[in-house]
Image 1 (spheres, rainbow, N blue to C red):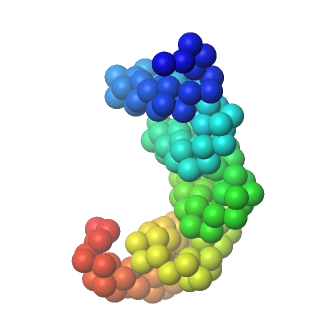
Image 2: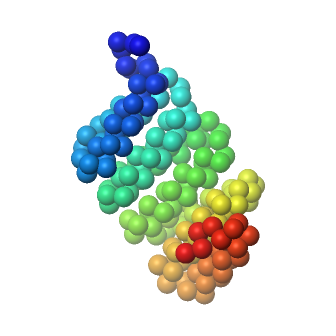
Length: 171
């Protein structure tokens, strides 16, 4: 047990759990307060994997309550850290997350930039479910951009990729 929770990674995990509980209770202010405390402790202790996961979680929850600009900021911080750490799989993941939230925020050209980059990088990593998600996200964006022929091509590719991966993301 430590009196000073600022350097206690296990304490940060408890803060994260409290944040989850408050989020379930629809108290997003308290939820993000505790999640922010956890994020800071992870950062202060160089717990990079936990920090990256926390960026992903906070950004996703912000997106879920339609706080797109906050979500974009958080995902960009995660991407920046992933780049500094040279974690290619996390770079692709954050580019995918940014592409999706930018699409929701109707920033279509920016969204396209991130999704194309994620697709390009993913080909080097060859992570089947990430490939499927990236292509599906791009297909959705193309449909929104009214590029129906291209969207159809990507949706068909997604159906093929889904079939190859036990019908993952078939919807």
